[in-house]
Length: 146
Image 1: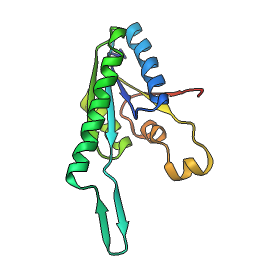
Image 2: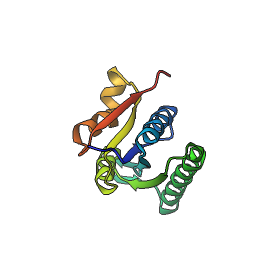
Image 3: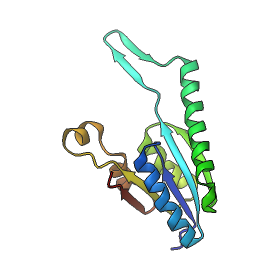
Image 4: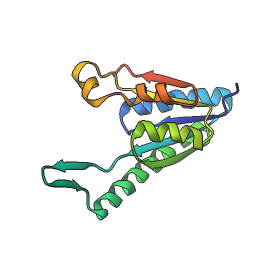
């Protein structure tokens, strides 16, 4: 299997930038392109008498901020000489990442792990772990030593 398209999910953390830099090195070696994907969810708060979510204007601002941050990452790493595009998705991150792998015809997903253990892992779960289990393509996990 040739790797020509690499999907790199980013959450704008230092760990996801480490994964992006690893993907860039790999893409240079293989002559591949990179798609950055950021998935976000609109928070919904359940109350005893109903639910509350962000007003439309704030939800739009959240999406606009995420798109700006993605665009900045593309510009920041333009020096690498690797074709990099960006994709913004709204939904559960692991579901959007696996869907994005299919939609972009990715041959590989390169994703950061945050290294959470114990209660943090139990309550927050692991997006990377879920992606490894559900991805239609191979997944390379990168754990930064920060």
